[in-house]
Image (tube, rainbow, N blue to C red; front, top):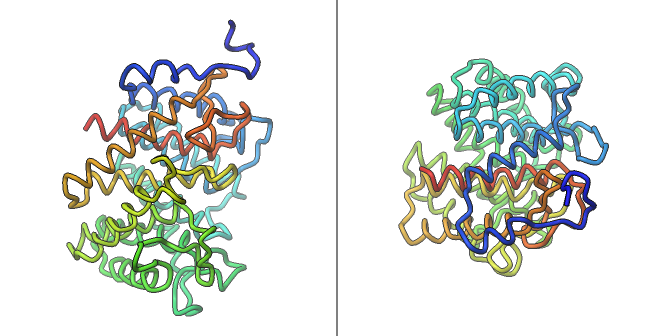
Length: 361
């Protein structure tokens, strides 16, 4: 059968291979990165398109995570092609955002700042560091006294004090403190941490609510769990305050062990297409950081590592080719179509890069 011209009745090639041998995670990550380019990259606009089905729409925060994924690839391979693409992507994002970096959504700017800090760490190119600082200067203006503090989700929604705009801000403030030793950044990190802990985190389970006034059990999302545990871990790495580490572990362990909502059958739940397609990958990113950098006992590390491998094996088993990888929003089901949003593919890339990095280090 000619894979390039075959119909969408293909083929989960890995479903055969993965059942007999341990996947080559680096090879899988390489293939996913190549597929990201083949299916979603706009060579004329220098950004990643909304989907692989003739929708060239530009999504600011999806592209911020694409920069993060390129950093993953570069750190793993040291291939300079990733760095070239990183610079091209920034050029495209700036243009597509109206020749500016400022955005109505504070969390969109936060995702880009985080990715830029990682890009600076990987390349030492001050262009990324300077952009992260510029974004942080804008992000801080989103803190208001509404609901006792917190950074707004959007400028035109002043009461929207959400986890998605505070967890990432906590990570940025802590990482900038590590980089520059500016005590104001550490104060910001503590302020955001304390406000979010008091307003958005269930103290018993460690579950992170979507936002102030929205403690709906049907509106708790994996990415908010991820950035909260990631931010708490960053503060722990600076202060060695055990409460911060306990917060990170409590939230991570709840997601990993919960078989009702977050991890049915031990695999992260699908959260649909659109923005939801990115949520799982963000949680994965910070769970891996907790494994690597947290003072976590060996039993818990093994638990988290086995969980990640189970997710990766399920993802590959349910992947299809067209001839590039196609991943579904559910990591336990074959994709129903070859038409996918870039957000879904980015989450899969994050998981595969995480496993490639974790198991080779």
